[in-house]
Length: 470
Image (cartoon, rainbow, N blue to C red):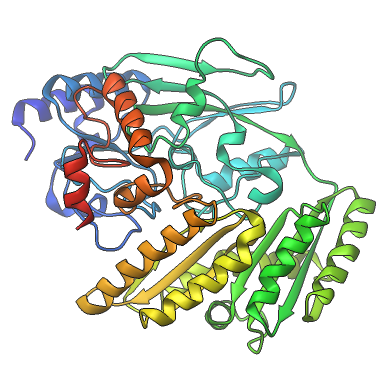
């Protein structure tokens, strides 16, 4: 429970109406989109500007009160759950697009702007903001930056990090710094901008960002390739990349996912296919035509039994939106949906798909697999019921084996969801104990009182990590 004096000081900073302390209102901020993790905060505070954020952080640092910056709560690694109580920081007032600079091809935004609104604002002036996480309709840019979110277009265009040019950050001691800028080149000191992208709110609070925009592609085509063999679809992905073609989107869905998505979206997806590839290419019309012809041939050479191109923009958008709905569709089947992400080099995608299927059989669990196959990022999704303790235990063992296999193939334990709490026990598989210690030292230097999103990314000590992993 928040000390009465501290509550009054918070109210003096942001106004009484922007400090929530009742259990009824705080319940919504006790969890995110990650199952099995929940804890009540002591308060939720909604600052109106950077000055107020800085004042809140200074107060919390003085009394060692945890702070959890939170966007829309779409996090999938328990990264925005207030496991140590404290204050959840909301950005409903800091939700403005501050500037679109068409001369420098940049957009300056506050952290509470929805990703979809950034995309549309750029589109209105003939520009393009490519990052498109699956939750882009409801996710906020501050959360995207904190998690370095990916998306369907990551293969060709990269992820959030590739479009963040500068940041305004409130440090854990309440001081404000600005990094980067509207620059094509900048090597003045350490690259703090890139340090904070993907830091999961553990090093400070992002209060504004300068985003890079690019010209809109001239044209776009969308293709659906159907397979009777799941591994043949995965091998097609490797073949496309090996032929020096980089599609804008190259998505993979297994049969179980296709059936659920079709039941949800009702757009005519083929239920008899063991696997489906959704492929999109954009750019100059002649390049798109050439690439799609070659991609169609590669699909057929790798056992696709049907390949079709969307005839209208509406049909193409329906296919893409159906893919985006995969998590929502799957979550209708069982009370608990555990969506994971493991990433491997693109050349190893077929081996990883095969391994996931074998692991599912080994542990007698249901795993539906979909994801951004073009960049090696797969989402093995477990459908279960958290009340079934035996099955949950088997799922945890299966996921650990999946992560180990991904690392063995030269991959990583997470490509876009982040570490948070969910993958804290597995981080050492990827970066090693020396890597964790290096990160821990950065955290200690910037946040010696451990107030910023504590308990996320890595534990304070090796002993704590081992306890959590149990």
